Amino acid sequence: MLDGLRRLLPTRSEQRLHEADLALADQSAPDRTFRLPDLGEGLADAEMLEWKVAVGDTVEHDQVVAEVETAKSVVTLPSPFAGTVTALHCPVGEVVRVGAPLITVAEPAPVDGSGAVLTGYGTGASQRWSRTAPEAAGDSTLAKPDTHPRSDTRIPLDASAAKFVRGHRDTPAVTIWADTDATGLLAARDSGGTGLLPLLARVCLAGLVAFPELNARVDADREEIVRPPHVHLGIAAQTAHGLVVPVVRDADRLPPGDLAAELRRLTALARRGPLPVEHRTGGTFTLNNYGVFGVDGATPILNHPQAAMLGVGRITDRPWAVDGGLEVRKVVQVSLTFDHRVCDGGTAAGFLRHVVDGITAPDGPARRPGV
Image (cartoon, rainbow, N blue to C red; front, side, top):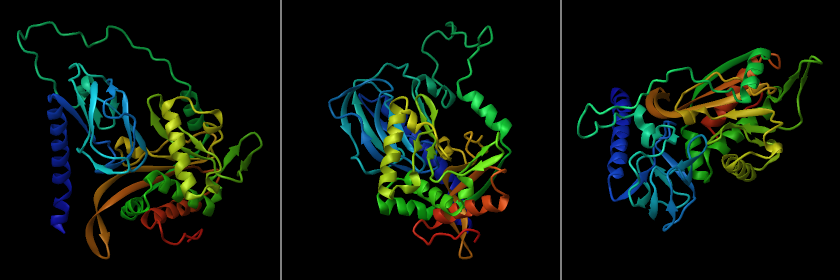
């Protein structure tokens, strides 16, 4: 039992240090190799979805070269190097471990780098927070740039700020959460040839079939709860333009394969630019994958006027009781934030337990409401 616990911390920290050293070593080579970074989800691998470049192409700093799928979402990978692509190290569909080579680019890039940052990984100047830059050679008394502003910096609030305030002010929201063993979910991903995001969406939709009270909104003017006949599922996605929530319309009516394809299509659209209006409005429930930021849990503000949001944290190795013994398992925290006006705590807990059961045994029998 103690040996199992000791394996958790040293192994993870040693692995990340080793991966960081590999990345730095490659930056000084004539052919510079970009390795899969730690994307902050607590997982050790990602599936290669699409190459955006081919051998012989010229790439620039921060140009997107690939899309990979992690435990929670599709992530675009910008190149930290500029030059000519000389090798792609893994085919589409292959699962790549953190630290494994992805792409090699000839002709070293300028040393100042770019500034685009992935979760858990930075390029160029953006790495100041994670690693101390070496002192410049020569006279140490050379003038250094003034990094302290002489006056306040003022940044206009974006359009979402008012929506956050309204949602927080007008909604009596409550958050509940539970940890669950995600080993079965990962096994279903590997055996089924699909990503985790479609699997999580299916679990979420099954919960809403059993507990339709949470697929709702409150009409405050008429003092009524409104339950639409179908689920228009919003999926929170981080893009270069900020956080967006593509909406899969009638998600509860889509077969699994069509649901996965639609999620992939809308995520790609969101990363390329503004979504069509029909896919950024009208959502009735949101699936929020904040595990991509490397956090276990959150208490998000609801996406007004929706009445509920399912949150999924990172998947990490943790000690877990199995049949009276202790094992190291892949564990994830799931949370439900809900408007207390649309249901009581029992209904909310029933939905969350339904989701937990679906993650623990994705291929098992559906949980009956109230059980």
